Length: 465
Ligand SMILES: [Zn+2]
Image 1: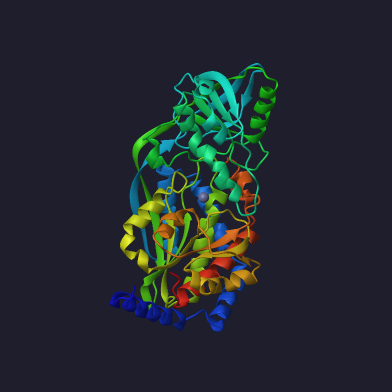
Image 2: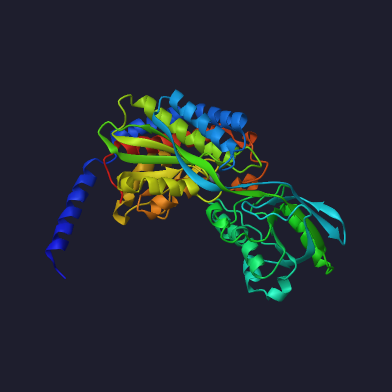
């Protein structure tokens, strides 16, 4: 139906389109971005930052004193590097901390198992729990099981994660980690064990969050832990003999109702359109088992070092504001991401484009977008130099990274500088996530890609929503 209002809307859209196409990514801008990327291939700052963070702070679990020290480290380093408006934006959250974690097969062949409690897991009590094991090939099989088969038993879900370059196997595999404790509880089971969500064959268990830490209190679930892959194999072999297998499990984590976390923010103020924001993120918290080098010390190093290069290249500032956000409490359920989105709800319309580096330290192989359908080419222009560095153009279904969830849902356009994730889940959330796993040249390659993206996004005048 024709109405004056829709005519006005049409005019408005026309005006927006004219504005949007007025300042595209020009060949001159692209040339400057390529020059910055070339220099960044020699970058040493990103590696120095990851080294410093993982050495001087180490593991930094959400809501703990260690995460607070990581923020103090970040604030000091960002100020020293010359960023503006460096600050913490605090929020509260429930805090879960790991205690003792031990498991062993009691019968028929007594032997120890390597496990790791899942984030948010309930405790077994100081005496632990002993019970007979009932195995399921998948979460779906447990969901369909008769409660009589589960009641009074220790559930074991033996579902293998698929290794993929884009990490797509992870989303599928995490369902069992997120749900096992609650489904087991609903069916009267004693505890839940899962094959680690990971692709390694080393003897480390992969931890990870069950429900978001903000939702754990609502339904505590049974005590839950991940087995290392070789231990899951071993258990499966013993079970295949048809004998009854009994396991003893001891987990003594503690849950506190309230603790403090914060996002750390730093900016390069825009010289022409300071209210327009190009947001680049990483997360400052990590799991407690390793030193969080690959997840996500690498991301912190990459985005800070890349933004620093833009700062140095443009003493008067880019046209738009570049905002670096180091999110707190990502691992336990994107708590910092949610806090950021609600605190800045009124300004999200001014967030021109956003992205997070949170997939390790491997090289970038794809540049993808999630923007308005008719703005895809314009957004892909922001990846022109990233493609020169070897990345392929991706589709328009980017997530932008875990901490971009709420921004994306609020309509903020995102891009993904996708890293090769073939090996990422070998280390992910294990004690083996340490600095020696990062290749400094690969890290510099990331900085080169990110500096070109940030430079182009902050100096073009285009919109993507
Ligand atoms: Zn991460």
